[in-house]
Each structure stands twice: as structure tokens, then as C-alpha cells.
Image (cartoon, rainbow, N blue to C red; front, side, top):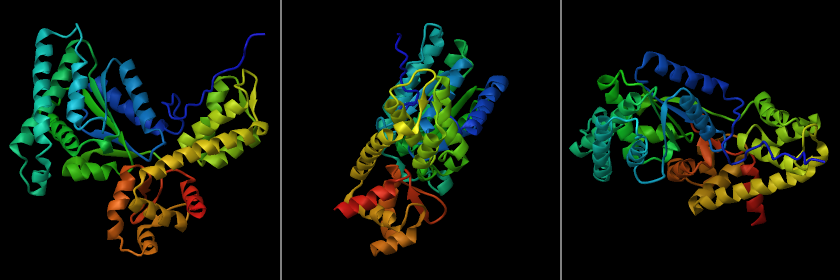
Length: 396
């Protein structure tokens, strides 16, 4: 008999091909790309998708990139924190765009300005402390202005060269935006602002993704970053979480027993990464079922044990990332409960003022362990982490 086993359709830790619950965001991206294609004008706002780790921000950006490329746009992908300079990373990616279809003039224009970007941003990185921008009553340094202008010229040259070679335009994607260097964020904002006046007919756009506090990071780098458009990604609703489990299995001809489905949904609480992880463990426990198979309660116990081990591994890693001061803060948070906690109550539990925990709080947000919710409140980004920390403290 032929082997009917099938590999798991779930993708923990990898780019998801299905994005249930993200239709609204995909629809907005579709509108922006359509307008770019039809009107052949610069998309003047930088679009930033924010949310905690594990909610599918990178998968959303990759889906947008696939959509853009299917529409014959030229795309560039950069990841904040991959090097000391986002601007240099973008310059290196622009260099890869040159093809035999490019004219000699377009190729020369791009390569010359890329040299300037690479040369100048080592200098520009020293200038941020001189002042954020003219809007704050500070004058930008000549070194920074020259470097940012060079980035603007590089984006313009890359877009013009791509269009002349037959592309619909240029679309930039920046992942982990909160981890990019402040000068790189500032230079991109500066370049895009000036392009609105100086290159309005250029078909180009920027989509980025970052952790929940990305807006604060951008604001600290450049005041007019408030003009960026921010969209928040949260955990999935009950219906979307159910679809995230059912749809991949259905495409493989495999069903879900209702009791098993409800149990997995209860355990994962709409957190996309955990949904993919538990779904994968159920698939393995069911013996990699072929068409006609089912994921049932008889597979749940074994799958849950494997899922628990994977979740503990994730939590151990996140705990290990925290410094001693940060660990004290997360312990205080965990002892206050599983949901949102008040910042002042966390500080009181630690016996300090709210101001005293500011640095540890910011660092934990930078690492993606916690996020701010409403004013004065915060929470863990992954469901179950508070319980894990309470158990860890008890074991100690």
C-alpha cells in the first residue's frame, strides 16, 4: 500500500502561509499596493504593523511581499538589528536589484549614491546626540543631513532604475523595526518626508513591522515619526483561532474531533505561535495522518506533553534573556496575576517607585517579554508565562 502519511501543515517558528484573522490588515495592504499601481505616486506614509512576538507580524510582511511581487513590484527586505546600520543594510539590498535590464545610466546613478550611503552612515551615527530634529528646536548636523539625503537619493535611484527596467515600482519591507539603529530610523523618516515633496510621482512604499513599543522607539528617534501609520496585531479571536487549526488540516483532508479542538483552543488562548505549535504536536501524535484521518482526544495527552515541553523551552529562553533587575520585575508582575497589571502596583510590590522600574520595563519591552497595554498597565506577551514564572519561583 502507498504511504499516505503527510507532513504537518502547521508551521511553528516558520513563515505561515495562511493568515486567519489578518484579513483587515491584508486588505489595507492590498489597497495601498493597488493605489500605487494605478496612480503611480509615492505612498507618503510609512506603514508599521506592531504587536508582541508570536502574533505573525513577519508572516504578514512576507504575505505582503509576495503580493507585491505578483503585481510586478520590485521588493527589498531588511531586518532591524541585523547590523549597526539599517541604512547600510538597505544600500546593500539596493545593490542586489541591478539586473541586465537596467540602463547604464540608472546603474551608475544607483551605485554612486550607494557608495555615499555606506561611507556617510558611520559618521552620521555619531550625530544623533546633537539633537533629535528641528521640530524639537535642534538643528540637524550637516553630517546627518548629508547622509540622510544620500539615502533618499539611493531610494529614488533604486525605484527609478527598477521602473525603467519594467517594474511597477519599489516596495521596502523592514522587519524588527524596533531593533533598527535610531539613526537608520531617523534617516528613513527624513528621506520619506522629503520624497513627498521632491519625488511625489515615484511609485514606492514602505511597510514595516515591530514589537508593541515600536511607536515609542520611533518617536525617540524622530519626532515626526508620529506621522507613520501604526496598526496593531493582537491574539486571534476564538473563530479565527479555530480557523487557524481547522483550515490547514482540512486542506490535507484531515478533520478535527470537536473535543480535541476545544481543548487545544483553551490551552493556546488565541496566541498564534502556540496554535501552530500545538497543532504540529497533534499532527505528530496522530501519526502524520493521511486524507480521511482525524486529530482526536486520543492524541491530545501525548500532544499536550510535547507542547508543554516546547512552551517551557520558550519560557526558559525568555527568562534567561532577562537580567537580575528585570527578573525581579517579571516576578512581581507574575505574582500579581496573569492579565494586565498596574505599573504602580508592580513597583509597590518591589518596594520602589514607578520611576525606578522604568529602565527594566523598557528593556523587557525591547526584548519582547512584556508590552504596555492601556496607560499605566502592562502584561506578558505570551499566555502562560506568568504561571511559569510563579512555578519557577516556587521551585527555587
